[in-house]
Length: 626
Image 1 (cartoon, one colour):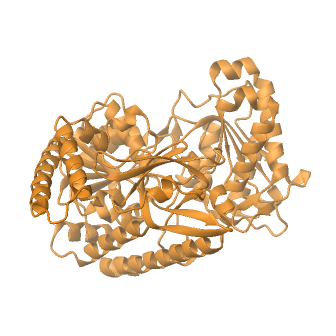
Image 2: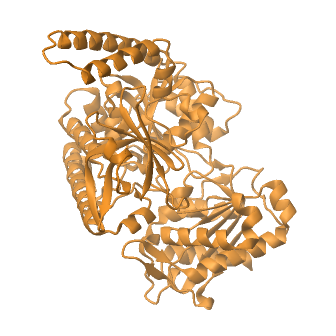
Image 3: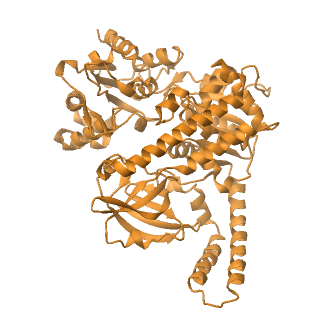
């Protein structure tokens, strides 16, 4: 590790090499899957819609050609389409995939409706009027990698500027970050550590980290820090790894009365979220109708071009320059009014933000982002505030070699190591009963996280154990493998999970569950188990009145969420003590900290307790049940 500190350049070159391994691995996997993986399985994994129902084609407000499509398959399947992801269209003939000769980009998805932007030259009729059934699948995301490589190259080459200074600071423990000095401000609606965190952000000249364990109000603190920063700066850049995280922070900022301009489309398409997107604001601008007419005229002139029309180019050029003038005017106004520019990390490379500079960059969920992705917006800022929790979900990495090489080490973790003085830990949690929180606090946060008095003893039933482990080793619940790469399932454990939930619901009583809207999250680290549980809940008559209060998802699907009752089905049960990626303890930390009042873990102790973490957790719970 020490070698890493000696030269930031060498460490970043290593990062680049690891990123290249990951890039090649993902590209190779994608190519193999395109050749071999059955379309059925792709649809099941949420990576394809087939067959789809075409809608209409049109030009959107940003003058991009769009195709509207609808999913006709199983609506229960969580799909992986989201804004900005590249897609390919295909047809199926005699069980053979034939790709159409263009790629598109997801503009937005709302339930089973998706809008895809395509090049002007794309043969749209091949999608809309094809006699064969058409499908759409995620393509390999070349652009994101390209953007990350460019960012790393820029950081490696940086000399004598702000970017070079931040690079060296983040990698060199002997360098000390600079601070402003002024007396601490009080914020009556924040607790002591939240208040301290906001003050630390305001004092930081270079970098500050808000470390927010589960339920400690990280977003509340971050929103306050952004609000206070805007008292001193005209505009800030706010980024996060995923569209969902950008939406969440944007929504909270809008609720605080801040003018947010969201670059890219939100993952939840409702009027509130759309109202602060760049596209919707652009469309609502008073100059937009005039621009729309000009663009339409350009398209018509191109379509009806007559041979030997000498004035064709002059006409087009004149109209184009008028259109550009209007676009610049609209953009200047939109960006001039906005106090917060919000986008994903990769989205910060958008052409609209070219040449823009910001005093402060805020990166939310920084512990889930690859280091290379964080450097994309850092190039535009003179100081950086990172918020997140490196004891929760890590970045997703496909290549084991890249992971073992250290690609999963995030920039936030690196700064926590080299510059511990810039970190503020939020210490009071407002979500969980004390008993549920205690293990996570002791194991991951050195026992520093405490419960707010109002949640300390929260519960559903009198004399109830807030945390239970239901051992499945007695009922011979064994894991099975479903499909080649679809995952593991433990059907006996799934049935027991629902039987335990039914018994608990009967204890609480139907009337109380419906009146108090007591909600339940069933979590499994395995996607196949999630889908199996969803089917079971659908089939069982008992759960019919409660279905809207029950959500079933993977650990990643529950990130940032909470429920009154959480059940975790761990799935693994075998004679060799193999637990696969349950060894990723950060994921387990997320799973066990989603519950407000009741946590039930179902797992085979003889398999799981061979691992020290699960052994510790099991004994911790056992002690409390005596």
